[in-house]
Amino acid sequence: MITQKPITPLNIRPTPALNSSVPYKRLVISFLIAAAAITLLVLYYSLGQATIELTIKPDSSIMESSITIGPTDGLDAKAIIKQLEYSGEQTFPASPSGEKEPKASGEVMLINKSNQGQTLIATTRLLSKDNVLFRLTNTVHVPANGSIAAKVVADQAGDGGLIPPTSFTIPGLKPSLREQIYAESAQAMERAEKPGNKVTDLDFEKARKILSEQLLPPALAKIRESLNDTDRKLSVIYTSDINQGESDTPAETTKEFFKYKITLKVTAAFYDPNELKNKTLAKLQKDRSDGKKILTIEDQSLSLSMTEVNPELTQGQVSVKFLAQVAITDAGKAFNKNDLLGRTSKEVQNYFATIPGVVRAEVKLWPFWITSVPTSPEKIELTVKSSP
Image (cartoon, rainbow, N blue to C red; front, side, top):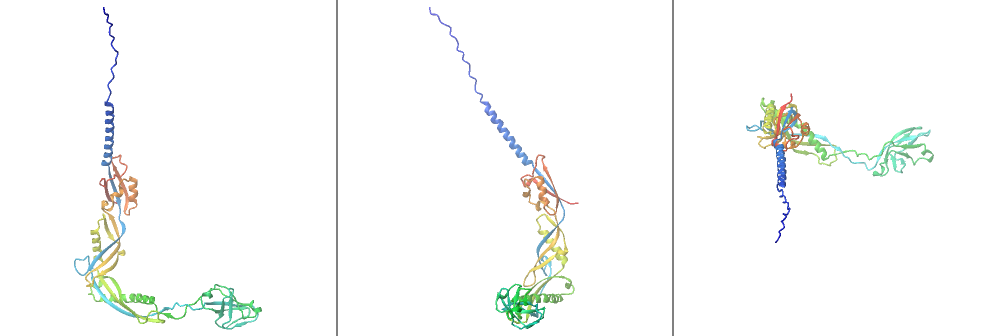
């Protein structure tokens, strides 16, 4: 009989299944956090707004413009343009020749400490400490226990005689007298200018300038006389040129006087100052695109200069310069918003503090968490209000 042993079951524990959903959840959470951060960042910058209100006051500014004037319609301002040639001649002194004497000269003080007077004839030798020889130009008598001034000239030509103040012995005297009779100079010796004048190109320039200044008033008066009584009351702006200038003496001629003649061409434009000022103001205001308005012109500062006139005298160009009161009316045009991007409120206020005409700047940032001006110009609003 076969006996079977009971089979004992194996104690095998089942292996738990791997939890594959954990890394996935972490990935999803990280993605959501990143998306939220990006969303917040987008909201931070997209919602940011800056309103900058500027309190302004008028400020002085130098204005410049060019206007066209003439007698015809369609120009910037009306003016009567006239032209005249006016001649004049005058005698002028020539300049000193500027040439130097060949020998140095100067003045010495002859001193006599003896009890007897001493006469020194012209050409008496005087020897300096540095052995430079000079001679008296005239005979002099040196009184006993006294002194006298005398002119001396170097014995040799050239710059060797240009010596500083010094003392001189007199070699022609007896050795016993040289200690008692001698000379001293208080000024340096120099080569004096030769007498006589010479006509130069600089003399011609001076003559042209003087004649031009002298001829201009009568030339303008003669032009004004050609106008009718009403137009003579108008203001005038003018230019003048020397058409011709000639001298009776060539340059570099040794001569005391010379004659010089010029022909002055004067172009004058007669205008109504009020009309010109108003037309200039209107033209400037029309051409402005910087967000500023010219309020008034300071009349005393108005400066005009005629720069060009056509040969027919029907049209001229005038440069206008004046001091005006200017106010900011459009901050968006007056200022570049790109200069404000990313600045803090304090930085914006410091920026406008340096701008003439801006009293103060008030900066409002929205939403509350915004701490600087947005980085997009479209998010910035600039407004102005007048200072009380």
